[in-house]
Image 1 (cartoon, rainbow, N blue to C red):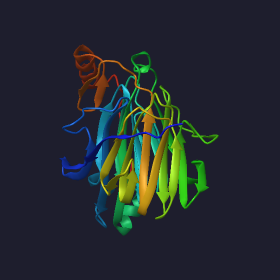
Image 2 (tube, rainbow, N blue to C red):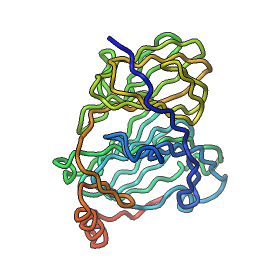
Image 3 (cartoon, rainbow, N blue to C red):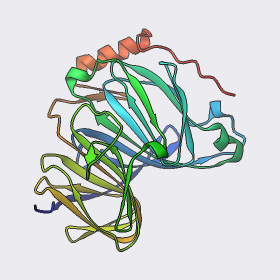
Length: 288
């Protein structure tokens, strides 16, 4: 089996999303999407002690046509939605939403976080859904750290969130073939990550430094790989946390507007109308 080469190293850009400052490696000037992945945001978000939950984080907003996924690395995020879910996901956990035909949700720092203050560190990425599944019933899956299977090897801990990796199956359901991993590694780790050659693949680095294909990437950089091998070779040159997102390309037209990811502009207009008419449900938040 051959090792993949690097197509490009992309340095994330700082973006301001309604006063929330984030690192954005995708989309980038070089690439709009790495099918099926539409967007990646990495935030180390300060939580002000004593500020009410209702005035913190992100208030109710809709989604349709894709899965917004949040990896929580520090702190705690409280999710409420129009399906009646009210859950807190803490460090090491994952919040998986299949927005389907429409869901309204909010993302606030947990009650514990606003009482004590601190930092919420998250990565949120958007995974496109094939057209035949875009209008299915939405659902929400909270995964705690202890519900996320992991593999320990060569100074690395590999958490399998979705897909199958080294005979370990991730619990999150995807609508196209994917392997999604979270990794915590020590300097000196030498990893070979086996991924189907047909999968598009990227690695985003939260901190530390990695080498692949003779090239070095550092904190807040993204490796974008060519589809020219079955394995990704990684040398960890400094203690590092990183994620690997890989998946079979869906290969369909993509139309996006704000929180909606569909196939055509007409479908986007319909999504906007459906939201305005209350067809995606309603969310009245409750706080202790």
